[in-house]
Image 1 (tube, rainbow, N blue to C red):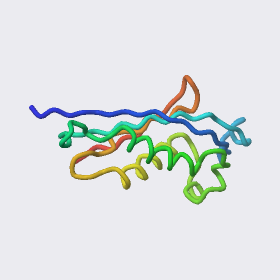
Image 2 (image 1 turned 90 degrees about the vertical axis):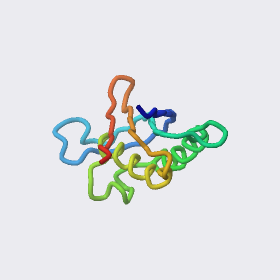
Image 3 (image 1 turned 30 degrees about the vertical axis):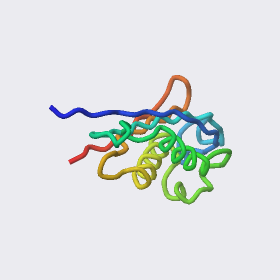
Image 4 (image 1 turned 180 degrees about the vertical axis):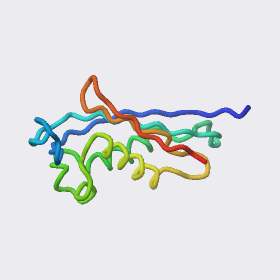
Length: 128
């Protein structure tokens, strides 16, 4: 059986959003201190025994989070057509991270986005 390594990092950002067509208070502008957990899998290790350096995952994730940090998400192009829900934000991170990190040895496995200390969404895609 082949082994697999899962590497995880955690970072955060703050932003505000409005949930369009939501039947409640979240239809008004409000903010969150989001936490984002990124899981990357590696089936093999590099020449020094790493799947990928944690600092690489952290930097790419922080760069993407910087695009959302202290912003009103509804004003951003990536959420012009879709609601900036936790689900859609998590999927956006997953796809953007995959474009930047995936290679023949490593792949983004899942993104968990924490809206509050007690509520999160995890986004992953099945690999064929």
